[in-house]
Each structure stands twice: as C-alpha cells, then as structure tokens.
Length: 486
Image 1 (cartoon, one colour):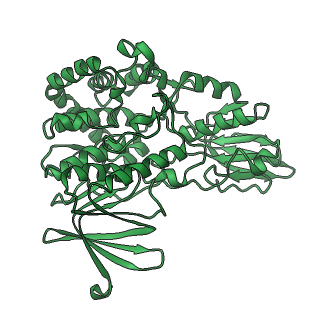
Image 2 (tube, rainbow, N blue to C red):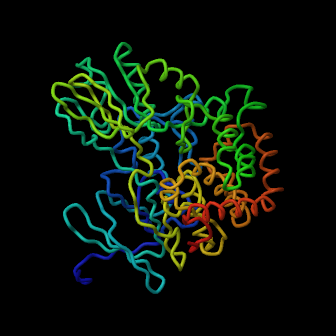
Image 3 (tube, rainbow, N blue to C red):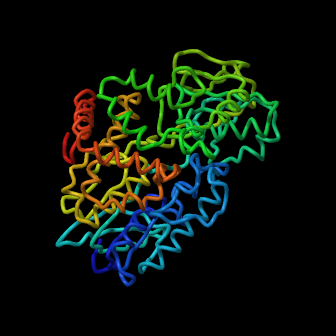
C-alpha cells in the first residue's frame, strides 16, 4: 500500500465495533472528551447494533430491558420493569444511544468497513480499514478501542449428508412462517443455550401439536430469572442479590472444587431441563419458561449430533456415542448450536504496551459480561490505568475447550478479583453510573448494605481469588493471571 495514495483521517479515539460493547466504550469516552473532539466509530455491518443486526428475528433479552444499555443511558421504552425487549426494541435503543452520544462529541460513523490492522508510533495509533468497494482508509488516533465483544456471527445450517431432510438456521429462516410452517414433519432443535430455548419456546407456541425434539449435548443450566429479579415487595427481602451472591460463590471456589460448586450454584441458584447439565454462560431462564419448554418437547437427547444420513429407504440422525434415531423424510434440523465461543480467535492482550490500544474480547477477558468489561476497561484507559491496575485476565475460549465445567466458577472469581482492583482504581461514582449493573434491581438500602460489605472485605478476599485463578492456570495450562502471564 502506498501511504500517499490513501486518505488519512485523524481523531482522538477510534472505536472498532458498533455493538453494545462499542457503544458502551463510546459512552464512557464521551465522559472524558469535549464537544469538539472527534471520535470515529466503525463497523463491518451496514448499521449499528452488533449481533442484534443479524440474529434470529424472535430473539429477545433474557434480563430486564433497562440493564441492557450503554453507560447510564435510559431507555425511551416505557414498559414493565421486568419486560424482556425484542430485537426491534433493542435496535431502537442502540440507535437512540448513538444519537444521544453524537451530541456529546464530534462523532463520525463508518459502516460497512473492515478493520485490517493497526500500528503504534510516536503516540499515535495508525488504523488501516477497507470498505466493501476496496477503498483503503487510514485513521490516526490517540487511542484505539477494539470492541469485538463475543464476536458473534450468524449460524449457517448444519452440513448434513442426508438429502431428505431440511437443515436450516434460525438466522436465515423465520420458523414462524414459510415452508416449515406449511409442513407437519418433526422438528429437531440442536443446541442447549439461549438460542435453543428461544427457538423451542417459539415452536411449542406456534405448533402445539407438532413433534418437537431437542438435541442438547450435555445440557445447559441458567440462572433462575424469578429469583435474580424478584418483583414487588419481594425485592426487599428475597431473591439472589448479585453483590452478595457472587461474593459468596467466589469465596467458596478454590480452583479444584467444581463438584461442590455445582451443588452450591447450579443446584441452588439455577434452573435446567436436564438432570446434570454441564454448560453455563450466564444466561437467564424462568421456571415457567423451563416448564413450558419441557412440556412442549417430545424428547430430549443428551448427546451431540454428528450427521443425518440416508441408508436405503431410511433416514437416520447419528449421534457422537454411535446411537442413531430414524426420522421421517422432510424432517427439520434447526442449528441452534452456540454462538458464544463458537469460533477460535487469535489471542491478543487486553491492552498494548503503551495503554493506547484496548481490546475487548474473550481471549483476554477481564470481566463478564462484555458490556461491563467495555464500560470499566474504557474508564481505566482514559484514566491511564490500563497497564498499572493489577487486573487478571482469562482466556475464556481456551478454558472452555479444556474445562467447560470449571469456566463459570473461574469467571465468577475473575469478576470478584477485578472488581476489587477496580475499587482501588476508579471512583465509586463509576460503579454507581454503570447502567448494566443488575444489582440496581434491588432497593437502595439493600444495595448499600451489600456494597458496604464488599468494600469492607474485598482486599482481604482478593488474595483468595488470586490463588484460585492461579490454581486454574496451573491445573489446566491456560492463560489466567496478570497481563503477560502464561
């Protein structure tokens, strides 16, 4: 590339990614920048919204809608506090956030643009991008935030051998209409996460008399939404108040006692469809939803689907354990396998040596969920504390491959360790202004008690969390520790 032949654009901050992670980073950046300072926000998609642009049409939030926001921006939607917003409503809110933030700084948005590379020199981050028509642009910024988040992409249909079945993806086929609606053959939903739960709920609602089956691997468990977000006066004394609950769980986990943690967390705080599920990624499900799904299913198969094959006049589903299931021609196989951590990505540290580049992704995760990670890490960046704050990182992708059962408890320990570090590096107001903090569901007196207890004990407990994370690192040979630790 000839440097003199490309357009160079200069700005204070360049943000790659216009999903919730990127818009959260933008919200925080506007707190530190002036009205005339320029921010360039770019995304490979044609519009803002991240995964909400191209996910399945019946998707909805799994937590009360007000906690899915950028910074502390309020929703314009005036619904019941427990309402679970749908895709169109989430997209409207993200557009509202972007519009609001564009009045705080000189914001330039560039959509349909791919990030290609970045280099640092003399206090400037040089970003190379390419648009769909092949045009190359260089952006020179003082700071770069790569807000990749979970890097979710739509699911393709499963590549199955049979020519007699319909293999589809909910991202490209609305299950509520079209050929599936006009047929009566069985449906097999493959997956165990939130997509599969949403899909089964839609299917059993739309087609109450149809054969609907779930192939769910080892099964998934979800936090019980009814108790995470109790309604009415119950908020004052009941429910799983998050600060206290996660503090208690983190102090119980020692890096080797995941079986005990299953009994404590999975069996005490969560709901599930199967007796001994092995997967968890911080999703919510109500007991009523779990009951509706269970009642509507014809069968649940606790195995992984390998293929669908035609053998003579019969068509069979083939599972990893070697068992098979004969299905009628014209059956539907719906790919709802995991979006989260479904693909392998190269490792990169959460910050560069200079602290001028922040990378929000799962190979060097510091907090969960990524909206919270983006919010707090951007605050650290603008306070020039990214390199100095003694945060721990976890390679979430690698740990899930090696020890998926340990992953949720390691992430709980990671959060508690790093929230303790943050308490020493950012003002309390930063915590109070985090709109994604689900503890805000509870009355102020209850939150104050839990917050005061955390502030009183967090430094003492931090040593335990540090030892726990280092045990996980040594036990599974994964990146888990201070920045740069192997």
